[in-house]
Length: 447
Image 1 (tube, rainbow, N blue to C red):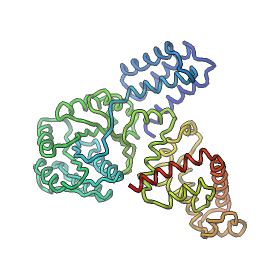
Image 2 (image 1 turned 120 degrees about the horizontal axis):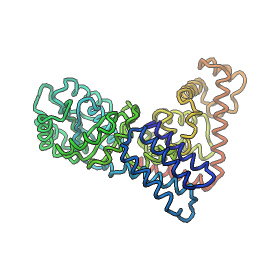
Image 3 (image 1 turned 30 degrees about the vertical axis):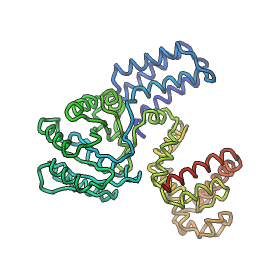
Image 4 (image 1 turned 90 degrees about the vertical axis):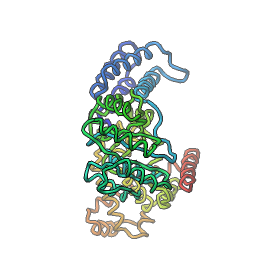
């Protein structure tokens, strides 16, 4: 999970508030110190930390809770608001036809991010063209071509050509019918005069709608000065922070960039091609504080399973009381496809409080094992799990290379899930609401 250490520290602060007998001056001062410690450990600038905690303290001591809110809920709300305010600096990239010019120094993950961004827009239904205008790094065009092939995006490049602006001009002509055109540019170890001039020439040839700076979040607070320098040189309109999943300095990079003129539009959260998330301060803080992010989870599901009728039908069966092992198999496959289990679970409200109790690697292996076991069942057994007893259990275990106890564990898990779904099915109000969501999703997928 992104900024896992910071998230855990912040959730401890909220737990201290919830567990307090009352909200008084001493508690406010104590949680202010805890907030300071958590944010400083995440590399957030000292002045920003002091400003935020001072604001939290002032509001918590002087503001009266609004009607319907307890003092504890009010203080938690204040912390949420101020954290969002620290990182919020504008909207992400709009879902519309556009030309995007990617800029950045060497080693920041720029070319890989071009592929991730292409994948993001293609999942939204846009046609995408990638232009390889990095004329200095020998393997840049090959890497871009491999990424384009992986996501299904067309790539334009001119091997051996050293005039980047010429390549971009020809690429724009070749991709005149593409809804999204992404230009990968050269990098340097520093923002030197020749790089600035080349970027200006490319800018004149591409006439981009967005100039997006790619920054490695491991640079921490130095992300701010780098963003400002690129902005002064070429007019950066957005920033993508890469490697947010593998650094303790992510808080510093996020907070530093948020104070520049360039807005944060995406964060890179892993090595997989899908590990690029639109940045939204409200949703980001919600996940950090353990409040989940169901809207983004639903969006991932919609993007990953558009047109996959088996997954949609399994979800509907779960709510209608017709839940079988066939449906359970589809749901397990869906969870696996959506990414690492820990990432999926972090989007569910309250699940972060169980992170120390869940062995995610073991749970991921268990899901894979369950699917292997079900592959050894007949269709009748999967549709009528009640018949799986005695010799059937032994046969299934032998066929899948597991012990009979593992088959029984799967059946126990299935019965628990079926019971839970039955409870939801009896709640007419909840069932109607969830079925409506699936209906809305069907409509969106059919567009």
